Image 1 (cartoon, rainbow, N blue to C red):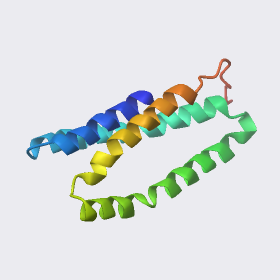
Image 2 (image 1 turned 135 degrees about the vertical axis):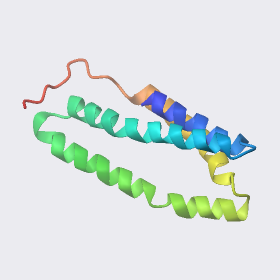
Image 3 (image 1 turned 90 degrees about the vertical axis):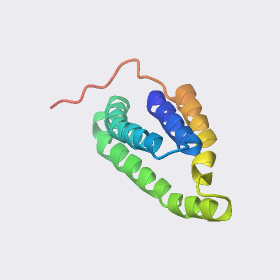
Image 4 (image 1 turned 30 degrees about the vertical axis):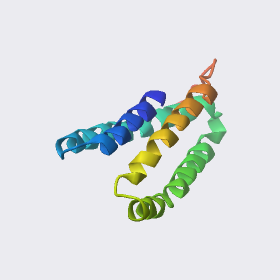
Length: 119
């Protein structure tokens, strides 16, 4: 998860610093990697941490929180782009995502005895 967030920081920084369109193509590819790694990583983590009877509730909670957290993004980004300049949302995102990566690194604990889910 920390690697994925670190990649997000690099992408946002590249968006801010890009002087031509070509680095933005690289950003799109890297953001694709960030997106495709988050789902499997969080799903695997939830299944290892949650008890057998709690997995459905834990996945539902994660999906709900994720969906709700995405709602204000376009409004905030649009406001920053309009009020400041078009790259402002990415400039603000760099430190926020970096702090999030540090929080994840410090608080996310690998389970000592992973729960095995019967198939």
